[in-house]
Image 1: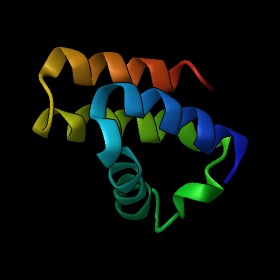
Image 2: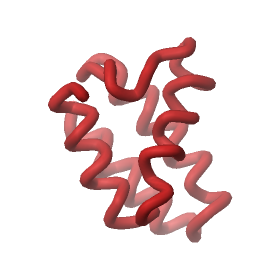
Image 3: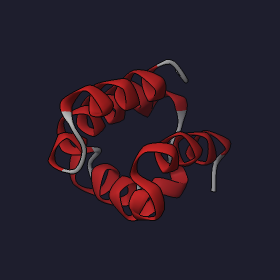
Image 4: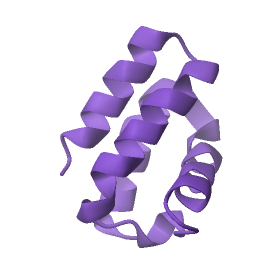
Length: 76
């Protein structure tokens, strides 16, 4: 797992709990052209943050989803 993948996962677990890895794997696979989550790089962060902000709203409230997306975006 890349360093950036580990950081994104650590942030996401705080909001989404144990489902975080599966959630992030889906986001990268479907929204980042089939990218494996473990291969995530800094240049992928802005697009991933956008999709996390959208998709996380299906699981948590809009404010938490937005805060999560912002934390991820700030990694870039």
